[in-house]
Amino acid sequence: MGGKYFDEWQLGERIEHAIRRTVTETDNLLFSTMTHNPQPLHLDAEAAAASEFGQILVNGTFTFALMVGVSVGDTTLGTLVANLGYDKVVMPAPVFIGDTLRASTAIAELRPSRSRPDAGIVTFRHELHNQRGELVCRCERSALVKKRPT
Image 1: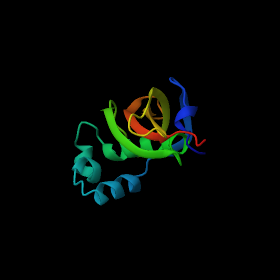
Image 2: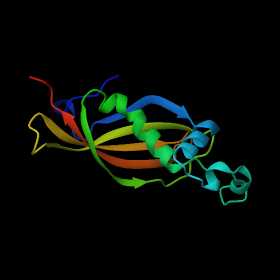
Image 3: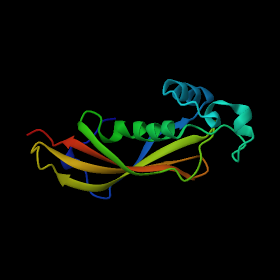
Image 4: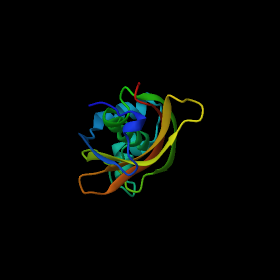
């Protein structure tokens, strides 16, 4: 487990991340309360049962953070200078307690940094799917990544 240097990435390269994660009620409850998100769909079983979902909906920000976090070990662990931004975030299907999620990453863009000759910008396209194969989250993450030391 370890990130790659800028010069080691290839456009279109794809990684299926080995870490899979079953989302628990505790994950959702702790994340929602620690971020001060009082949304009843995330915290109130009775209110959620009466919603169109019929059950508690996992906090979307948790879903997003899990997707990015799972990817770090294979993409930027030890090679990241900075995350520059997140773009094109979509969540086309809900995540529920008990869903098992798996992530993949593709390299969408590579370009040298204009301001840092020792680094380049990698655009990662992260995707997260549930156990039914449904896409539950996708985003593009731009990161400033170190070049291999000479």
